[in-house]
Image (cartoon, rainbow, N blue to C red):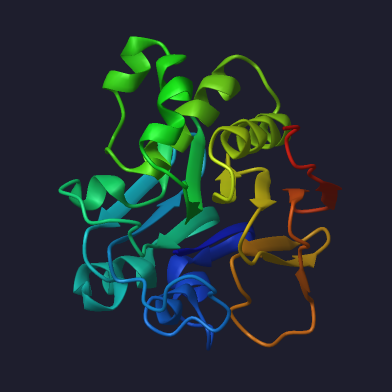
Length: 251
């Protein structure tokens, strides 16, 4: 189910991160190496990035596969950034939402992606959805499971939760409501990255003081890549990476 990647580091063309590496996210759209659930990620893609002096990210999303979009190839070649989040999608189920269902989702200064699936969707999360203000439900970008996961997470962020805590609490809440869900979540504000490994693969590559990449799988064979254990919360900046175990919710 999907592949995603977040980058913090020196100013770089988007394509240097998402397209050029030998096993880049672009290639993972049709040939992922470590994807356990699904084989092709052709149900949409997106990238969000931060421009100098502007905390609100820009996004480019499409409903089709990344390799078929000539406009993205041009954009990736010339647009430069110090922070981005990209994703390629393998839909849990077909929908009419088009590119609105493709990550990254955005709110305030945040970009978000969900790699996984909610078991028993949509009924399993009906109670959690009912706990959100009606206005937030009306603003959902799409009717897919990932859009509701994002609404639940964004609600906590706007309530003042620090990003890692918001991610951990949202993961545990959904896991309690929908056991056996896969909840690899990825969040950035352009200065920090928070992610969960919960049911699928997660890796990071850090050069302290320079850059960090957090991804579903390595985009090359550099030995700097480190695998994140399942049921782990990861928090990263350009200078530091912290891993914290995540416990299963109590029955």
